[in-house]
Amino acid sequence: MTERRLLLATTNPGKIREMRALFKGLPWRIVGLGEVLPGLTFPERGRTFLENARAKSLFYSRKWAGLTLAEDSGLEVEALDGAPGVISARFARPRPGDESNNRKVLRLLAGVPEKRRKARYVCVIVLSERGRVIKAVRGEVRGRIAVEPRGTGGFGYDPLFYYSPLRKTFAELSAEAKNRVSHRGRAVRMMRGFLEKKGQGPGR
Figure: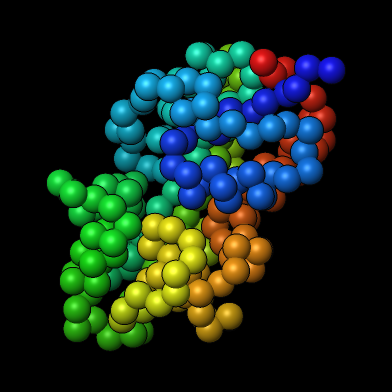
């Protein structure tokens, strides 16, 4: 029997790791861009998470014979008028990275009281096949920005994103606990339900 593979259009190892765990049990093996389309990149120019996820999904689905899943996600901070938003991964340009991005957010929020440090994580996932969008879902989770990084787990802004119901930052949660409540976990559960009903998909 030919193995069916689902392309996850990212080279981010943290996202690939989380998505593989979240989609575990489905009859597809999640593969990343570096594994099947090395060197192929798509410039993100969308103004919203949906625009970016949709464009990426369609672009790579035209290069890949099976199902293509593209995700765009990020942090929106109320006191920063929604920044960093779609440039979350590149916020601290010209030298972006998890630590420098987090430092920039803390610097911009210096002196901002707790009640004004509200934030949300947003994730949009788009599934396409051969240049046609099949399904799009959105998940989000609300929290606030801590005054300093806490925890060593996760990636991105997780050390700063404080989730009040569990009284911890996302970086202080286990991967399983985070996936139960995170923006990506919520979006994936909706997409997973769709894929379970679909029950089929060509791979290569």
